[in-house]
Image (tube, rainbow, N blue to C red):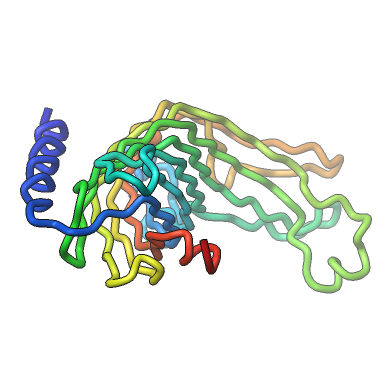
Length: 245
């Protein structure tokens, strides 16, 4: 209920903000960096050396369903993100080469963005709703050095790959800067809260390979809800993306 009240307050504020406005945009392309702050349950099992956080990249595109002939308060599109929450290395032994296991998360979402229909100022607020999938992936591969890469190209590289997919949905609030000309780039700041199903994950430091090459590891399940903070480049016109219309 608190989140719903926050969204309603935000929409009311953007409606008031839009009065006496003179401009509107029909395309928002954005891409940049993101930091993921997992919910307590999952943060406790991440156990990495940078605060149990995830770091990565995101990209998205939303378009006006009304085109450039008429302003629209809603933009529709797609949003993609990826981040890693750590990796671990296993030293080489007599029968097993050095191994590296990387834990990654990928998100694919449909997105609807609410914004002021018109805008006059340089800073424009918005609210996002997202729905899609979240993929957790733990991949173990041979930790090759430069010599191995050059001279042992026939050596098996990926030893094991564990994936699990869950439902992903969320809400976001943020703002973007509106340059004087839509053909110039701007910046976007956004905070998301993504709810997530429980998914299976590979417990850190549990991957091992015996002398016969058989991979063993431990798995568990955890809720995957998280807060994501993003800082992005944004483009508000086709000319910014492609050079000309």
